[in-house]
Amino acid sequence: MNKLVFSLALAFAALPSLAVTSIKATVNGMVCAFCAQGIEKRIASMPATKAVYVDLKKKTVAIEAKEGETLDGKAITAEITDAGYDVVKLETVQKSVEQIKAETKGRK
Image (tube, rainbow, N blue to C red; front, side):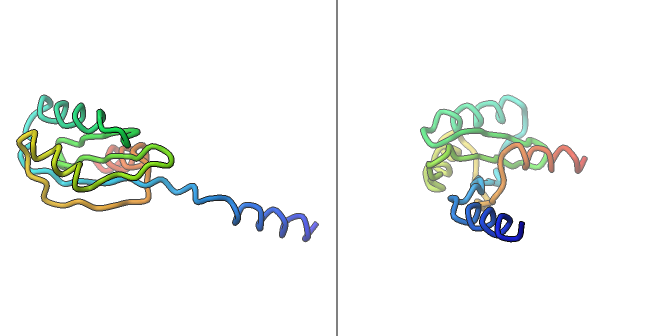
């Protein structure tokens, strides 16, 4: 039994990392739902984007990468800036957009 558990542990350790990588941007200038929708649409159209969540109250945008893709922070910043907003902070997090969304909804 111990050999089976050890073998399974080794097999799972050999799997590629299943961590989800997302970028969280803090954005100044978003004041209405139309602002949030515009940013969401622009970011969602980027090739590496799997999911986007915009939290208007916290002024954050969470972007999740497609599997096997890497998000480009400079390109994301450029899209948001070109839309007329200021990116104050950009951070990489090991969470999915759904996890970020759930955390945000839970902290009202």
